[in-house]
Amino acid sequence: MKKYQKIKTKISNPFLKLKENPPLTINSLNLITTFTNICNLHCIMCKKSFSKNLNKLSMGKKVFDEILKIIPYAKTLNLRTGGEPLLTPDIIQKIKLIKSINPNIKIKINTNGLPLNNEEFALSVMENIDSLHLSLNGIKSYDKIMKPAKFKDIINVMNMIKRLKHQIKNDLKLMIGFIIMKMNYKEITDVVDLAAKYGFQKIIYKTLIIYHKSLLKKSINTNNKLYQKVIYELSLARKKAAKSNITACYDDILKMDSSLNKFTYTDFCSYPWDTIFININGDISLCCTNNTLIDNILNDPLEKIWNCNEAIEYRKGILEKKYYKGCGSCRKIILEDD
Image (cartoon, rainbow, N blue to C red; front, top):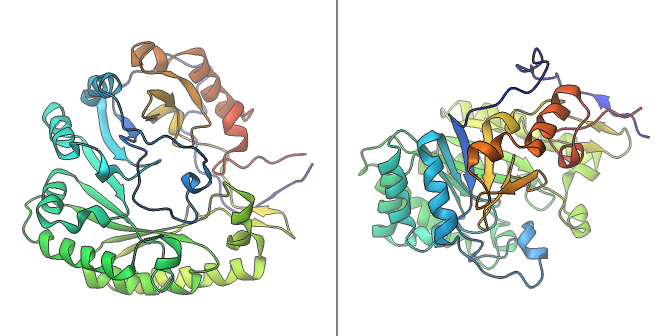
C-alpha cells in the first residue's frame, strides 16, 4: 500500500472528546440541494457530460415540501450541483417562499450566469439571495471549456451584475469559481483583473475532480512541474487580489504528485455534523459528493434520518479514523496507509 507524505497541517477536530455519538439536533444546518438537473451547457469537466441517457428532471412538489419543513432549522442554503439552478421552474417564487419561512437563512446560488442575461430576472435573483457564485473557469479558454457558451456573453452578464448591484439594498456577495486545468492555468492571475473590473469580492480556485479517465489528460495534478507552476501562479494571484481587497482562495486544492505520492490532506471533516445534501429525488447524503447516502427524505422525518445508523457510522468512522464507505475514497479525506 502507498504511504502518503503529510504536507499540510491537520485541522483541529472539535469532536475528538466525544466517546460516543449523542443524538444530534437539526438546528443550524448547512443545506445543499439542487432543484433541477437541467443545464444549458455541456462543460468539459462536468460529471453530466459523461452521463449517458440522463433524464432531465426538476424537483417534485413532495420533495420540495419536505425541504420547506427543514428551512426553519437551516442557517444556509446552497443551490448547486447537478444542473443550472436558475433554470428551475418558478425559482424566484421558491426563493421568496424560503425567505418568508426563515428570513435569516443565507442563500447562495452557484450558476454559470448565462440565465441572468435578462435584466428583470437578474435583478429579482440578486434582490433575493445573499451570495452569487459565478462559475467562470476560463477567459481565453472559456469557449472551449464552457460549451457552447461564448465569453462575450458572460462578460455582458458580469457587466449587468455590476450595474444592478448598485440598485439592490442587500449586501450581495459576488464570487467567481475557477476550476484549474492544463488549458486555463495561465489565466489564473487574469481572473483577478476580471473580478476587480466587475466588482466581485472573492475568487475560489479549485482543481478538477476526475469523474472520467479522459479528464486525467486535462488535470494539473498528474504533472508535478506543472503543479508547482500553478501553485506559484496562485500565490501571485492572491497577492494581486489583496491589493484590490479581493479574497483569493485556493486552500482547498488537493494534489497528487505521481512521482512522490504526496497529497495535501485532512483527516477530519465536519460535514456529517453540520451539512446535509438533498438530491432532486429526495436522497439524503452527508456531503455534496453523493457518496454518503443515508436515506430519502420521503421515508422519515429528518430528525430521525439525521440520527439513523448510517449517519452514526459515518460520524464514528471520522472520529476513529476508520472511514466508513464513501468517506474512505473522498478527495477531502486522504487516508495514510501502511
